[in-house]
Length: 247
Image: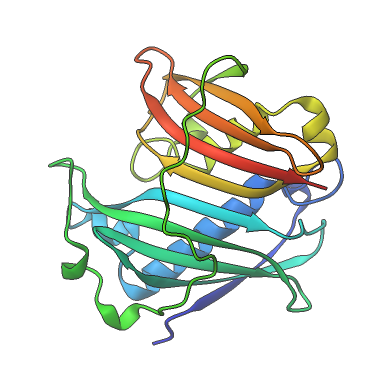
């Protein structure tokens, strides 16, 4: 059995922005689809795990985009389980275009979770070493990300049914979309996120309201922002992000 798995996607009209470039959400969905397909082949998909009262929860994400593909281009995602970090399972990704040139990479950290007990499960008992390829697409030990202090721009969002995943809470790319949408319009119109680092802290469910906060911490041709997603009613932190933007 191959330890790495590749899936190709065609960038479609409903996945591009006003520049006819793939939306960040489209690339995030490609990553998620490739990971899910590989997990299913290995016997560890969310649907299979739910039968055993287990599921995967994403803890950390680090995505780096070198170039956003255009409408009609083919994007190939290659993904593999890349090791363990304490109670976390690591999964990495490489993104290439139709000519085989690198256009991005990602690394992620996942926890195996029992939704009934609300406790983590032991990775070593459920993910054998034989499926691991000890290679990282982005070397990252996932140090803590800084919080986003108040004082910047804020936008509110209500969780819609389309935002909900198999685990009956907001799907992880949606939090990133909420964070990116809060960026100033000149940034959204002239730049694109070249680096996205995420730490997931909590969950939101259907009908709840969240607040997306942003604060710029570096200026210049590659501005850097801190983001925070908060539960509006409870005030609890749901997601912490740092993004770097470029042309």
